[in-house]
Image (cartoon, rainbow, N blue to C red; front, side, top):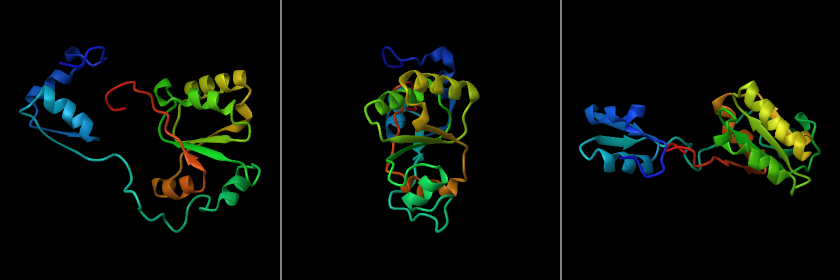
Length: 169
């Protein structure tokens, strides 16, 4: 059975796992969760993250030079820059908490790269405007996967404020 207080229910379709031959998940913790509920189920995980120490591609969207990235974004050369890359801006991504944190970090800019929905953009920017930090939140379109590592390296901090909203998080 799902953990108490969990939003997972057998009615949500995960009861079909008792009929599955195998399962692939994105983390050992999720695999342990399912193995406890379905002990006969064979499973494995495929880590959903880059290999640590992986060499950055030689050419990236902005170069790994911090000043080049800031110049292309029309930011001061030494502006501290936080980055979030990934899909979506729903509440479970925790980006409104970053907007709140920016109120305490007056020099920091936060760039968000990736595919998003206009509804989520509007919600985040409404919060940012209310907090008076909207001029330091930059919503940017996605770029090729091969450029993620180099572009993140050109920032000061990659931040993943993902909330404990469901099992995959």
